[in-house]
Length: 535
Picture: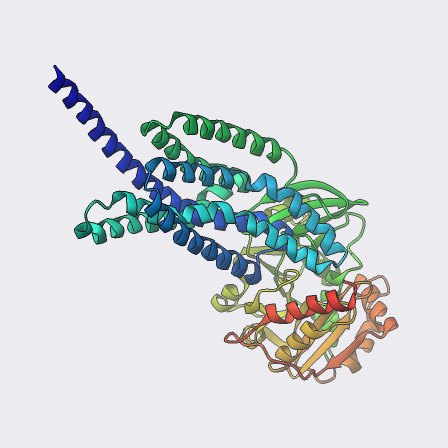
């Protein structure tokens, strides 16, 4: 009888040992998946407030690796001192809960950062960014414990230590690969950022709870289950509100696409498109007027720099950065239903343009929407245009590939004789560093570059042209327009203020190999913080 009991006990212990071993492998995999998944999903949590520039990614990637390194270091030492499966499973349960509560804790910090940015408290703005990134420090550091801890528990003989370590690191890396693709391709587009955090946390917490129960740690398992329920309830409740409040007007629509956080706000009868951090408006639609009073109005003016040609000779246009179609609508009002190709990289933005900004085929039948990257479109198209407008810049940083000598050369190669390129560039009231660099880069391709200051906005429109008589003919071409033309209204405004000139700046020329646009913008931000310059 005693022998039978001992045999049953030994069998149960062996079964438990096999189960624990399998659960350790599952947790190694889900730990690798969660660590990378948390990093990628955190970028979407931050994007509506800080954008998604390389500066943001450098911070996220660098600090994630730092936290993992600390976890590896501490995990190995703690595992040697306390080689307990219960401790490992408790650590992963805490890491999962910490990850699940990130969206709830981050929201008030991110909201406060908006006020800091508006007040130009740049230190507080970036301090808030660091604060949010630090939120991932606890779960990611604890996830760094997993691999060294699992190796310590699984190595029973030095002779097979290498095989054991290799197998576990292979599992962890496979999990990291899954964490690289799963949130971006599947989870975030289908269920959003907050619920993605819940899924990642649950994927780690559930096997941790099962493992705790398997080793007899019932109380920690019960606590972990209660925290899982609380985490889900708290995130669901928080998700019922807006992701981020509108900076102006009334929020009527918000959506997370694969690449952007999108808001549509209504203010005094006008619809405005805000993307990501929301500090810049990308499109305006006013049902009562085609004019906005902003930089969009100035794209129409490019053809006026031609010599001996009237504005009415403009027969085609390409817009890189279509957004909600404001410029396409204005070009149509100024020049008639000319063929316009509008390139927009985000299909969801194009859909929002059709739904809220009168960009549909019934409103703009002459507009051909192309959902594609701007440079890829240029490289794969043989079409030529009279006007090419570029308005794909995101505040405060801009895609470097859209402000290099090679890019402007590709734009030039798609212009008809006498055609012009028109680019919208942001600045501050007194700091023209970015304008000068982009103008100098354009000047390396176009013999003549003209700058038009946008009245009431901190924007400069740059026009690249091969025509040396641009300024001489600008006024004459303007006077030839009907007084009722919306183009005449905008051109007369620029002539009246005198904020139009030819430029030949002595500044760095950006190339595909070297375009430190983030460094230029960072210097502008530091100048703002030091001197208190307005936006």
